[in-house]
Length: 355
Ligand SMILES: C[S@@+](CC[C@H](N)C(=O)[O-])C[C@H]1O[C@@H](n2cnc3c(N)ncnc32)[C@H](O)[C@@H]1O
Image (cartoon, rainbow, N blue to C red):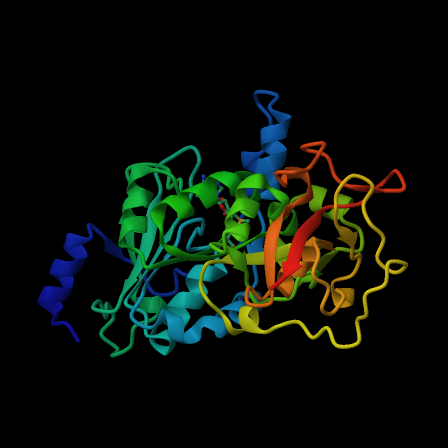
């Protein structure tokens, strides 16, 4: 371990301050109510910000990360939408720092109207000298700005990182993906299923530069939410209180990544699925068959097939080629519009072909 002298020199270099032990209790502040008070009548913005305030549970992070365990060894991990005091992402990586063999962990806090800070855990900084590196060795690095993931300071952290892991503000999904794409870094972030249909997301998915993580689509995922009465009112049946914490359930959550995992290379078992024109109707306005359930993709069919977006959960690039998504596929006769069968619109379809 580093000597006390070199330790303080390193802390000084980071311009950081040690955290008082016991400071780091992950909590959910009641700040959404404050932040979303609508002074300027900007209701849309306020709603988007409220929808960004979902805090991931430790068990859901662990359930995904376990599939990439070996990948993290020796890596610098950045959590760039993670108030370290509230985010279980920071907590997860800090607690598992040695188990995963991390080199460094950086988490940045976003403070829209003020100066912010980052928390850093470094494999060379055994701050409390207990021979281990974990949550108790975190140091606080003050930032000049508000910690926006697009800010110069946060982009510097991104340069330093090998991999970025977080649950993103959904309202900034397109901007977030662009930053990740331009950075050429590895990433693993939570988003919602609808993002698959965003032009920007789909282009990356089609090019095999972006895919879904391992947690199954349509799983129920509970998130801690701020103590804001609106959550209770608007989410009957999807809301619970446990040990004083408020939780909201969502079924439309998924992970997006560009890190390889074994699920992606497992072909779908199609044995027993025979093609027949009666079972698989053609679209009125596009030359492809409709496959309404992923489990019913016909075995050996050589033409173009339209499948639900849940296909991506089972997508194995050695088995299928993705040609496009209905609204944006190049030869859609009505660009921007979905396909129809007997005049009835069919919900979002991905066009695929067997390899
Ligand atoms: C869906 S929450 C997830 C929080 C945390 N990652 C977790 O899963 O517990 C998104 C977080 O992004 C933060 N955020 C919103 N806009 C941001 C921005 N421009 N830059 C960085 N973080 C931002 C929000 O404050 C919020 O904490």
